[in-house]
Length: 230
Image (cartoon, rainbow, N blue to C red; front, side, top):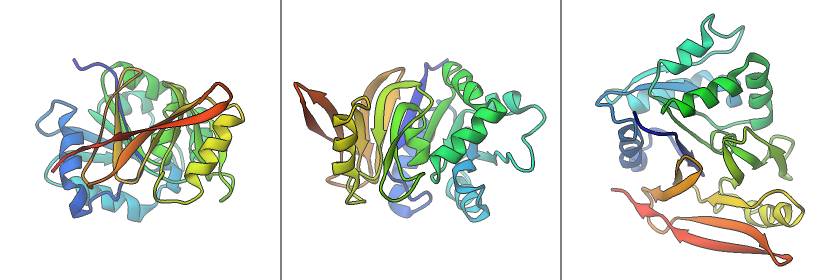
């Protein structure tokens, strides 16, 4: 059985042709020829359009289901989640998503799934939720730090090259005391095995991941070129 794995996308246009190779790579992490994928659209208020896009994106490559928590969760929520090989968490409002997850115990179920070797992944909200803290627009466009699930130590920031406020705001928040951590450009996936970053991968040339932390009273950023998958 594979060990704990988490994949966080700084940005991911699911189903777009340029992402086909990285989606194949993601599915391959399960070790299954046709993995069972669970899509969690909680952060987007369970957008039906988003759900359809995910089904279309993985059609023919995986058996996809999605997790509805409205009007209430499935009766056997834990068993339902743990019956999959990969859990993909969509983007949206992280704070709202985690409040709902905690109310229904999905935060602890996600930890159990991770420890059981089910690949946890996601984009934006679905990236930062796995870390101790994240940079989020859940409270408005000004971006704030927030406490997340803490499966991976440190903080995370998505959309690092896609939104102009992300880099300076992440630096401000780290200078202000949130734990240092990882940032990813749009199109970059951070692949963690346990607590350790194994690699950063992308399907888009020139993209990168970053380590941002406070050292000796100043914020230091280190850039890592992402491995290109084609």
